[in-house]
Length: 448
Image (cartoon, rainbow, N blue to C red; front, side, top):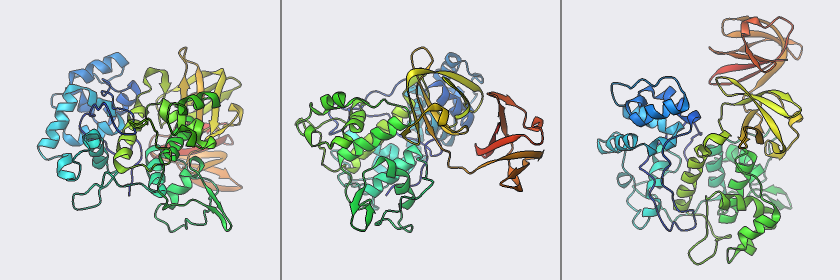
């Protein structure tokens, strides 16, 4: 079973990725890129300002034009280092960070893989990734030092994995599978994962089959569908997907409804075939394979480079016919929309004009800074839409649905009007507002 974790909330630690020439069924590990993206580095410095002890980090701060580049007098404590790696995994690419991480393991502050599990002989290709996931609590062993790398994942376990990695939104209306009662341990995960995973029709209703092993074809398609929904990949044409599966001896076994999405996982380098030429479409995913796959997804979440605005703390705050403005946690940025741009809302194709303001968003940029893809997700936090009355301290009085209610704003609310940040205290009584409680406990106030 997977322990509770959310991207950007959990902590990340592990040895440098092992470079393997033949990782069975998964893309061979590449060398860890040297340095995080500027957006990830900025957040990492917020949780670990003493990262500036390392000269590579100081140099990267200067390259990114970020504040706070003064060298720290002392190296980061292990807890700070781990927290920073949680939001910027590619910090592992800096030699100083890597060496200090090894020292944290050596002095007992963090456990080494061999101290965690004793059944990884023959799994050197996955050991570093298993260590990483075990340290952050995503994958757990079976107890008594056993990881069971050859064990298989059920569909329920895989649903829990993708929910915790991608922080999937809960549906507004429950799917209500006949074989997944509300008391089931993975009920919430399955509800969130349902739009991305296969479902089954039974005489009594729709089933999820939570105990069924997750197949490699299903896993590939699920990961691909999420990457497309988040704007991190474009859906290939049917012809392009067919060429991907023609390269595998069992590619014809990939169901037509999954082929295009599953091809995304192959093209992004998350999964590959076996030495004999097959993909293992109907084979089940092992726990070791899942560890490597998940590590690749984690690296890819930061690996878009400077051409993608990718952050969990960005929200749509203004829309024009062919442009959108987002608030990224520190500023409002406006992007023009490419004529062929893909726009999705909760994973489904949408027109930009129908995407509600305040929705979380990932924007994929083209080489000229325009938006080539926009993936919006309705925030899971409750929203309040109504008429602004007054503000007192960290609370606002708003008339919503005919009733006056106090809405908590947190310690640092952000108000945005016409695509510009304004003072929340300047909002006039009677103004229409939408309040999203999403910014680290504070409110995002959209002035209509």
